[in-house]
Image 1 (cartoon, rainbow, N blue to C red):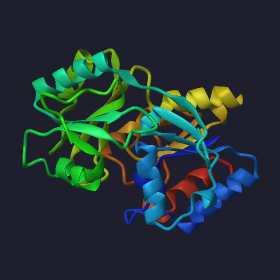
Image 2 (image 1 turned 45 degrees about the horizontal axis):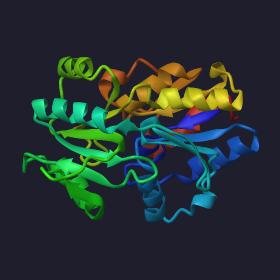
Image 3 (image 1 turned 90 degrees about the horizontal axis):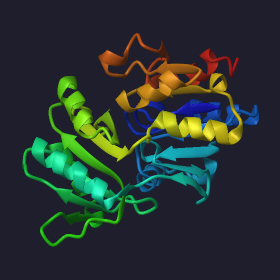
Length: 278
């Protein structure tokens, strides 16, 4: 099985997929290798990205999509959802109370398959990354106020922190939210802000990849993964072989095998280095 991240890995900085990387994924499938994309994007956002680049979903050489950082898995193409996870209302209230103490701006995303809809709370006009994301999904957003009803089930609660976040403070946050999966990621919009995503306990790219591998009867050592950011680190550690893009945070470098840049067909280089292609 070959698993690739999407933004910053399979996608170039211009939000396109290089033809060579598409050919590589097609070649892997022809050789009997299961191809998987594991993305932090929701299903809606992923499909919208394909539409923006003019790529028909049927033409994407993919077997499975792991989306929302592992909260959902589906057979590709089509609408066959084979796994999904959600947070009940009382869990969301616990998370948002914690985020309020930290003074975060955040979004509560509805459960799969309606993850594009969200409630939001904003306390700062200076959180430009937050407001940029708000503008992108304005038709799906509802402000969180006194009379707002929290969803019965939610996919995640997402905080957007401008200017980054210390790892010590992140550890404190994880301790306070020890009953959940707290996953940091660099903003795919401004590439500077930190997105802190909180999911049900056990949700991550590695956990969903492990579930899928077991579901398909594929041993861990037969899995190769490639990524570029904090939310890929657990996946790269878990996989039999883990490759990291050169366009990754410095703190992740030297922990995984290098695979070049997302702008230079790093996914294809990873597949070749793993021995899948000649």
